[in-house]
Picture 1 (cartoon, rainbow, N blue to C red):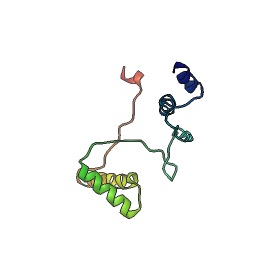
Picture 2 (cartoon, rainbow, N blue to C red):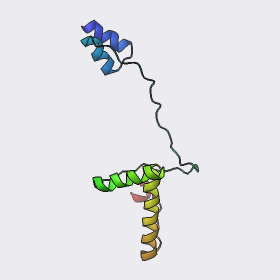
Picture 3 (cartoon, rainbow, N blue to C red):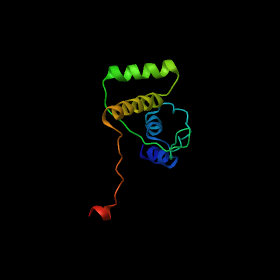
Picture 4 (tube, rainbow, N blue to C red):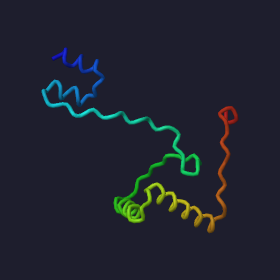
Length: 108
């Protein structure tokens, strides 16, 4: 059994394939590895950031349903709504100013 496990590791199989081999199950077909994501950009070549937040399932389900119905990605829909929300805020409270980053040397 140890030899089977070592052979599986040498053959660069994943854990599922290794366990199927040890238990005698038929191995799953090999999948091509997924390339790592690098420097995603919007369609207009403007860099963007990954963000996440927590919301109610009802809001998420409705946002997904709208995105699907209108044939847009959830990212496009959420970005659009964020932009509208910020514009509304700025109408009420004035333009939002983004502070420039300071270096560690400036801070300490």
